[in-house]
Image 1 (cartoon, protein in one colour):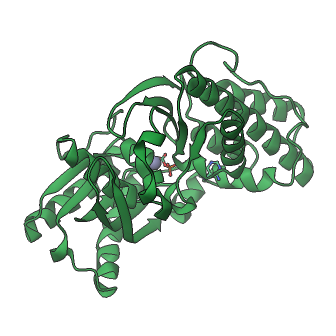
Image 2: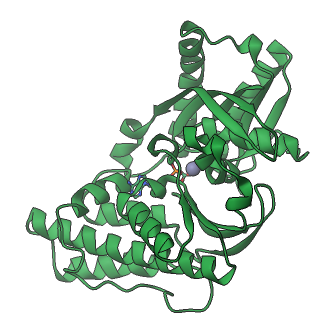
Amino acid sequence: MIIWSIETSCDETAIAVVKASGGLSKPKFEVLTSVVSSQIAVHRPFGGVVPNLAKREHLKNLPILLQKLAKEGFDIKKADTLAVTVGPGLEPALWTGVNFAKELAKKYKKPLTGVNHLEGHIYSFLLSKSAGRLELKDIFPAVALLVSGGHTLILKMDSLTKWKKMGETRDDAVGEAYDKVARLLDLPYPGGPEIEKASSLGNGEAVSFPRPMIDQKNYDFSFSGLKTAVLYYLRDHPVKTEKDRADAAASFEEAAVEVLVKKTIRAAMDVKAKAVIISGGVAANKRLREELKSAAKKNKIKFFAPEMKFNTDNAAMVAAAAYLANLRGRRRRITAQANLTV
Ligand code: KG4
Ligand code: ZN
């Protein structure tokens, strides 16, 4: 079936057309197109996402993206269903996508599926070309680590559609910590890619930042203390050279990655997971991907991650989540639900 999907939960306006087949036992996704209009330049002067500006940009960009797809030859009349993110996210931003999708559904007489953005992230590893060949029995039970700007979660997944939360952050999400530490280092928004770039020139052992909750026998995280440790360190050791900035960035990243990897692998060992699945914007971080992959390998656990372009917010993942939600009979209200959880 052909799914047209829309994503506007934060600062990316995105539409995708995805061909889905195979059912719950062997789902296969072919991303026919996935366009994302980023608002980074709009929010950058404010150091973070401004909800009403995000709304204004989504309202402006949604028709532009739709037109772009039409020009490329994609015909919405051929869609079997439409899908839209209903939450979690910024309420004014979510409404723009929800209202736009409702109008399209009415105009073209198509069914519309409401999607949980977090489910989209979790399923984003299924969008890679090789994923269609996966045998689900070789993956589950799995442990999923979802790391984004708003969430840091560990889930135990018994199947594609059945999971339980094992742990989560008790304060800041790891992406939020990246963004805040970037600001402390005078790096622009969004901070994740900037910290990653600066880190590559620095020494991760230059500063010994705390690894909050690393040895606690739970699967929770705390990143606000790590961010505060960076704040105090920089107050006492102001950045004088690019090397100082790179060392502080690399040392922060080393601490954050070590906690994420250690707790995820412990969770995977404890539940005898066959695979670890990573997703969310922070999953774009090469150090995190590589360290989690090699720790999984060392423990004979498989590792799955989305293709680079599907880590940060996109609409293709929304189509994947819509397909699976429909198959399991999961109906969501088509209204903005800012605080939706997994
Ligand atoms: O999933 P996402 O696009 O949006 C949310 O659902 O929140 O994640 C955005 C987050 C931001 O905090 C951003 O700084 C972070 O992902 N991020 C990264 C990288 N790329 C994006 N963090 C670390 N390293 C990266 N390369
Ligand atoms: Zn996201």
